[in-house]
Length: 311
Ligand code: NDP
Image 1 (cartoon, rainbow, N blue to C red):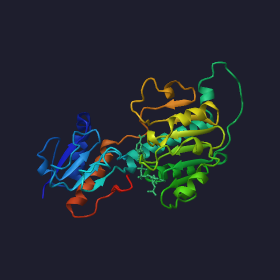
Image 2 (cartoon, helix red, strand yellow):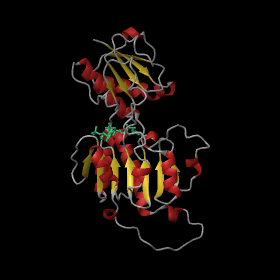
Image 3 (spheres, rainbow, N blue to C red):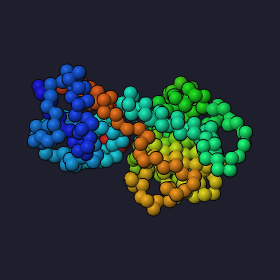
Image 4 (spheres, helix red, strand yellow):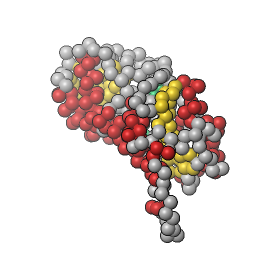
């Protein structure tokens, strides 16, 4: 059987993905037709990004699965016209590795107090050594594919790491907490908190005035998860009153971050333009191809989204 695969993402992505996807599908031994246009009733799989033209899946009568190119699925998970399995991107080689590098880099920046030496206009000779990592508790909210990998990397550097998730987890040498009752425990006294939760109604503004208040004075907030995880006004207030020392933010409620948003000019905020980790075409293509191979072989799909949970 020939698998008919529609690539449905922003046009610029096709140039990046056409060759790696074909290479990965060939290597996986899939017989396929891959195109950016195809009669909907012929399509078996859609390789999808939420900025795609396809918002109504009803005409895709033979569809077997939608394979999301990104880890986050908030742009498609609630689509009621989608009635087939939805898989998201989990790619250890590319996406996960990129996130581990970005998170450890920003944690180390704050842990080591690098800014004071990189920008030192008064030429201050201030020989105060930073504490060692074992004296700096880090909390990660979200212990999925990305959160667990970051937890292991930070633990490997010596940080005492606490992770928080919806269900119970076990990660060697990481304090794992879960459920509503675990949240306050996870945040209390954390000096650095990293947000790696998905955007769902349950996680909206999970860092708000009262949860921020649980952090250690001067704590650092690092958000590569999604903008809605944070109550922006509460964060600005906590930065202004000194309870939060710095925020490094990669994702925002509105992207690109509007020019007049106070985060841009705030001296205690670092803005990065949603680059914490990108889906990398070669390795992501292998993940997509493997799922199509499995679909064609009648095996279950990997990395399925729980539509009720929203991620
Ligand atoms: P996963 O789905 O693997 O993990 C999500 C984690 O969040 C799980 O541990 C889950 O708990 C936990 N979680 C979800 N809802 C709740 C809740 N209500 N209470 C407590 N815990 C909850 O996702 P990934 O690790 O792959 O990705 C995480 C997010 O990172 C993505 O959704 C995306 O928003 C963001 N991202 C950002 C990128 C960037 O460049 N800035 C790049 C890629 C991803 P449980 O384990 O119990 O299910």
